[in-house]
Amino acid sequence: MTDITVADSPSFHYVPPPAAHGAQRVIVKPNLGYPVPAPVTVGLPVLREVLLGIRRVAPRAEIVILEGVCTRVTFAEVMARLGVNRLLAELDDPGLRLLDADTLPHKTYSNTFRQPQRFDRMQAPALLEEADCRVSVAGFKRTTLKGRPLISAAIKNLYGLFPRAVYRARSPHARGQLHVPDVQRILVDVYFTLGVRFEGAVVDLTHKFISRDWQPDEGTAVPVGRVVTGTDLLDVDLRAVELAGEPCSDYFQTIARQRRAG
Image (cartoon, rainbow, N blue to C red; front, side, top):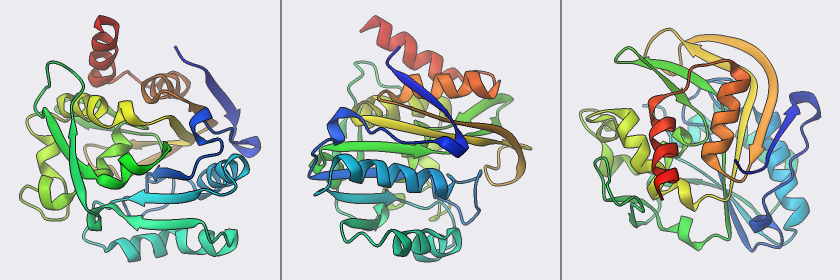
């Protein structure tokens, strides 16, 4: 397992991955896809410290906050309701940019796993390839799909990068194609397509969010009081699962097996 850091939430001080040091462009992918505050989405205190931590080691970098929402509410309105605009005004950093992933040009990324679950290639913003460092900044949620626990953390957070125009199903506001035939299988493809390209992960475990069913924005917040960081998305997610006392989702185990097999 790669190096993992666990901090108490009030004293969280972000140390970015080596790829961020002296970088010219860093992409931060926060979990801000719904107009509902933490822990449905990532806490702004954690996001703030991540941005400040990157700025400390990359004083000249363009820091791009990149997200794509999953709701009828517009991107601009979601960011306003969550207080992201106020956060950016407070930081007053001209090198910070907030971009809607759905509006950007996208390109094809190859699945690095030799036996894809469904997608041997996937569409995502071309900007991802133009960065020196990419960091997933996620909350921690547990939903239930088909009777199985689904943990959403650093890997699942990447769903917001995929254009809804490409991956929509019945609803234009969601990415329904990424739920067919099984989210747990699609997440394996997501990891081996985009997850392996990320150099850092942060999971905000100040609270864990336990959904009543499959809906990721309706449930109960349970205090945990931790923030987990590291350079490997899977390792960070697994440590977060352990700290949260939650069951390990199938896709974590599948990814781990495939990595051991090379």
